[in-house]
Length: 180
Image (cartoon, helix red, strand yellow):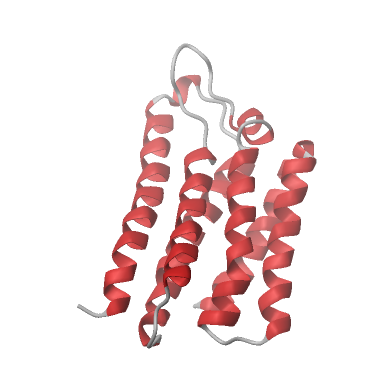
């Protein structure tokens, strides 16, 4: 077993749990569809969070050529995967009790914790891009900074969630294009 395989077992487990959480919650919401108030913006948000779960896993494969792993790199990558899990955990409302789960109300309230988790995830990006991939400094700082700005807007101005979710989807498409 290589050092990369050893390190990425823990990260893969956490990312797998994030994907499982999103899929499970969506299944619960579909089953409770008669009492759920769906909103496209929250669904778009959840799709983006799913995309980052998969993107992190995909980018992790590129780290297989890293010759020397440090504990700090392991801790930061694990933290990044935990942040993605946090975003997945809080991306969708849960249909529990007699309440009608309202997607938009959730996203403008408790769902902002999903944005906080993504903000923290984007904070790990520069370390990975500069230290582990040896990418250029400007791109490695500007792209995550844009993600941090979008997440800050969601947290600070929740009533703009619908507009920001479209921007987040466009940003996600650019990140997927650049890292695919």
